[in-house]
Image (cartoon, rainbow, N blue to C red; front, side):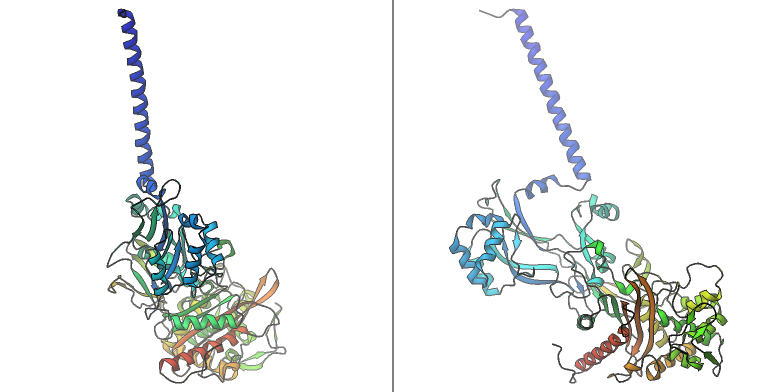
Length: 608
């Protein structure tokens, strides 16, 4: 029986309606897909790559980031070594005790270590020892493991960013993931796909200030392509992704000496320097040879809230009597004190409760003697004669108030570029209001509002030794291509301040020699090298009550200066002996020993 005409029309309309509905749904789904792809593309997400990643088990063998080297080409970052990588797909062999026993026997480790890695790992992992360091393999061990061709076990060269024997952590800094920073500072690279939101960027130290140069190439990765159950897909096997480029990544060649840095850090730890810093500069160029900050921190596991990652060598502190160098410079240059003039110190001054450190006072004393013996009363009288504006002016002229690290208004895509991360300026007064007598006498001895950094204090010694003109402190000498060619050189350059006259700077170096010959630095008189400098003890209120910052700033050898040195032991107990002087002495002895080694002469026995 044939269908009626009306029935056929209804069927046609119904079919047309269904077709229209399906058409709308397909159009809507296509639109959603296009919008989603556009959205994720704008967010720096490659959907194809994401899909592939879901079917890959991947481990990074090298970050692709540029190295940071010392002046002799020794690396502070990255050390290639052979290591065992275990992929989770090998978990199926957990019951295969013979396989595990075989690998454990080759590498000389306990079976339990491999079993634990297999049973707990969800991501590809490197076999590490109890201290978290990669278990290093020999070439023979790696060859034996790879010859077995066991899926999920492979021995390859791995380069970890931060070494187990890391030094200069606060100078080098660390990297982390910071999507917001990438969107703001690397918008062009992010939108073009050169960087993704999960890329690592420099968070502190040289890693941060030179991040644009260290970014380098894509990481080298090792991966297995697996199915939905985590089993390796037949025929694909292991894949190695490496970017071959003869020019990138770039590397930083610093002014640091790794051997010296290692020695200075050992001294800091042996001396129990839990808070403080040691800075060693080249006396002729103001290049940083060593910079130690304590407490140290783990670059692979940074607790930002704890603050240990900060570089204390560039943080401002009250300098105590080290600041008397500025007052003496102003007094000599302005001829505010005659060579034969004497001051009287009876131990107390005026009605401010201001006293000298020496009970009963120093009696009748000249400027030279007052500097050598660090007489508070004499310097209070000199400061009152000079006035606040003059003291402020000379602190600025000596390079103590502005950051002293190497800088440039423009460097490639960066404005107001500075080599040294987190460097703080110094100060003399909190405000420009009239400075009364009470303020001046406290300022004269480096207390009240006075703040300088250990780095600028070491640079003050360089200024004195080079005719009174401050220099910018250089931490990075050049940036090089991967093939060793030069990408950019950082020249030596002066600090843009007036400086002081050579005659005054020479007189100050004589005063510093008197400090050691007959004054507060006398414990340093019998070192391997003659030294000169200035001690300082600054009061600091803490949550634990009154504490002292122990400073000693100077240079060595005094007769032929090679090194400008600043040592600060922070927050020392009131009853503690002067740690700044003690550590300074150890630093000079170590430098003398290293100098003998470089000259091929017998030196002190190796440290235990």
